[in-house]
Structures are given as structure tokens and as C-alpha cells.
Image (tube, rainbow, N blue to C red; front, side, top):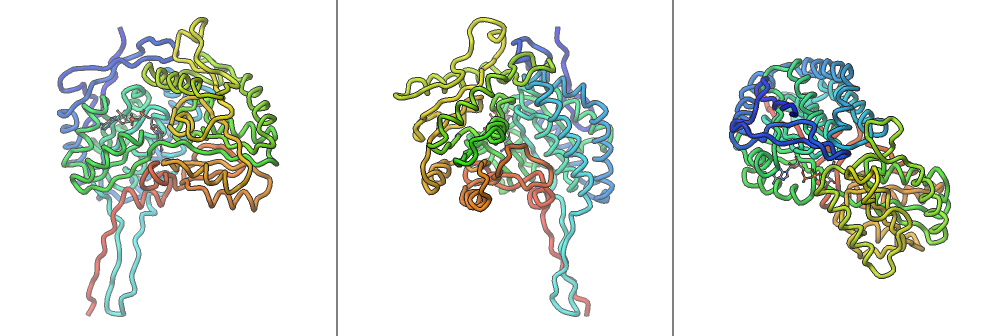
Length: 483
Ligand code: NAD
């Protein structure tokens, strides 16, 4: 018998109005670890109503006081860091040492960052003349409808909570159906430090709970993180009611390695950038590896031998580097891409391939790091977001060609450039059509960086002060005649 974790509506733990529930599965063992309510329209109505009522008071709380509340939430989350990290490892299949614990540290960091800058939502004065006072105010928008995916469920959920709350909005957030448990616990912590209704957390399926939230008349702003396909639906819902929308969507990010970077540091960085230790389930995964032809074989040799040292298995084991894929559907999808790659004439799999069907790894949704070499840039595995540990390596010879290939994608989220020649590195960084380019590193996002995509990877920026101001406040201009 598994436990039912409850949603948060108007400061209270709540079941779904119709009492239905969803099983949450541990993808490393394929066994149920808990249940959450299967929220629907009636629950969205309750939560949106509570958020709208709470907004009337919350918007008037001084900004620095709002920030103080977030700092207290950060301290409380830090005290429970280990317990929540274990929950996240269990529900996502992400390894505790390499992923779930660092993700919880970033949760604390995000609450602290936005807690600290809450008072920075400043306006301007406009010099219209000696006898005119003209100024702008950064006002909150109202009820924010937030929707997040499962791949970094607590940090992405925290981001929406922290930005919305710091700016004086209230929020109805929908957790991902596959990984809601850690975020539910964080929402309870928020409720201990915020007035009822300021943060509401719903669980449920996208079409039953996410869609009514996106369409709800009381929701005045939408912030969605997830796939480009669903992002398009969210944007339609926003268009119907003319509400502002932020979209953080998918990616197929290039990693460009110049011939002078055939070294261990670049190899390690490509592994980190590809997010192999999150099973490649990251929107910013550098999953298209463009290697200069002169170093193609040599670099791939180093990369493959390094990847074979990764330990794959039980996410709760401290020795594990890489855990399991989130669910059956995603596992099958990743396998289908591998099969598709294998069918291409000239395909060569340097490492990995289809997952083991016997042995301990066959008990969960485990896929080993997989590298396809000699991939044509028109192949599906080179163009579509796989969201699994599958890297495609493509050779190149001149800089103009590699930039053209890197930009030949409808995505534009992240990119990685590896060279010791800084002029060339920056020239490449500036030429690549992506919202975030890293030169000589493959790290994760840090609060303070404006984060978001070019092209179909998204609209708007989050994660930073500017992101909060642009996406979670609206400017009002007040003009006063002093004569
Ligand atoms: P998804 O789009 O299927 O689901 C994301 C969320 O949307 C879930 O909570 C889901 O329940 C909800 N949803 C699904 N259908 C809906 C609908 N019709 N209306 C409203 N809500 C709906 O994505 P996923 O598979 O959970 O996550 C993987 C995707 O997320 C990848 O494409 C990845 O690149 C992207 N992602 C982007 C970022 C970023 O910051 N750019 C970060 C993480 C993940």
C-alpha cells in the first residue's frame, strides 16, 4: 500500500475533488513508491480562486518582506535537503550524488537569490519637465499559472515559485505527473512561510490538469517549461485570452570542438554538457557533437573510454554516476531513436546501443551512454530532441561549415564551444543562434544568468533579476502634473 501525498490548495493539503489518484513509480525498479491526486478542472478552479483571493493582499506586502519569506523557505528547504533529495532520486531515477542532491542545493540557491533581489523591482523617473513627475512602477501581474516537467522537477518548480512570489504575484503550479513528490514537500514548506493561496501546487496529467490551468480565466500570466509541442498549445491558450507567456522549451544543442581541444578537459566537459549523468534528460544537453575531422577518431576514443568508467545503477547508491530514464514511454522513445540510428546506412555505434535485456539493469529503465559516429546531419537522431543518453558525432572541416550546421536546427537553447583560441571561441559563440553559449565549460545554469531559448526553444528569460522583471512584472507609468 503506497501513501497518498496531497496537493496544496489555499494553504491546505487536498485530495482531488473527485478523489482520483495517480501512482508514482521508481523508474530504477519499476515499482510504485507513492500516489498523488489526479487533479482536474475542479481543482484548478479551487486553486486559481485561492490564488486570486490571496493576490489582493500579497501584492501589497513590501517587496523586501516578500524576499524575507523566501529566505526563510530557503533555510527550511536546506534543513530537509537530504530527505527531499532522496525523494527526488527515487521518483526521477536521477542519481543522488551527481543529480538529486546538487538539484536540491540549487533549490536553496534559487530561493536565496530571489529572496535577496526581491527589493530590486524598481521603477524609473522620466524627465518630462520641471513641473511634471513621471515615474514607472513594476507591478505584479496577478495569478501565474506555472507548469513544469519531470527532469529537474524541484529546481524548475522552485524557479517559478521564487520569481512569481518575489515579484508579488500568486501562483498555481502544476507538477509533472512522473515526479511530483519532492515538489509537493517543497510546497508544504512554502505554505509554512506564506499566506494561504500565495503558492498552490496541483498534481495531475497534462490534458486534465495542465490544460485547464493554461485556459483558466483567473490566470493572468503563463510560465511553461517542457516540450516544444506542448509549449505551442500553451501559447495558443495564452493567445486566446491575451495573457503574457514565458516558454522554456526543448533543445538539440551543438557542442563544437576545435582541433586544439583534443584533450581530457574538453572530453570531461562534453560529458558534463551532454548531461550523461542525468541520462541526457536535459533541455541544455549538448547532444550534437561537432568534432573537427583531424581529431574525430582520437577525441571519440577518449570520450568512449571515459564514458565506460561511469557507474550506472541504483540512484540511491553514492557510487552511482548515472541512473534510470524517467518512465516506460520515454524509455521506449529513446530505444526507438537508437533503432532508427542503427538502421541508417553507414551508422556506427561506438558505445552503448540498445539497452540490456538481462541482468540488474534490465529491472529498470536503464540506457547506457550511447555514441553514434559518422552521423549525417540530416538524420532524425541528429535533428530531433531524443532526451536520452544518445550523442551523435558529426565531423567538420571549416569554421563556416560547422557554424552553418550548428545553426541548422529549429532549436536554439544552449551551445558549447571548445578551443584554446579565445578569439575563435568568442567569434563562434557570437555566431551560434542559441540563448546560452558556454566556452570551455559544460556546466548548469546559475541564478543570475538570464536563461531562455532562441527560435523554437522558447520565449522570454527566467532565472535572473531581469528575467523576473520582464516575465513576472508589468510596468505602470504614472504622470503627475505638479503645477
Ligand atoms: P511535456 O511538455 O510533455 O510536459 C511538461 C509539463 O506539461 C508536464 O507537467 C505535463 O503534465 C504538462 N502538459 C502536458 N500536456 C499538456 C497540455 N496539453 N496542456 C498543459 N500542460 C500539459 O515535457 P516533459 O516530457 O515532461 O519534459 C521534457 C521536455 O521539457 C523536453 O522537451 C525538454 O527539453 C523540456 N525542458 C525544457 C527546459 C528549459 O528550461 N528550456 C527545462 C527542462 C525541460
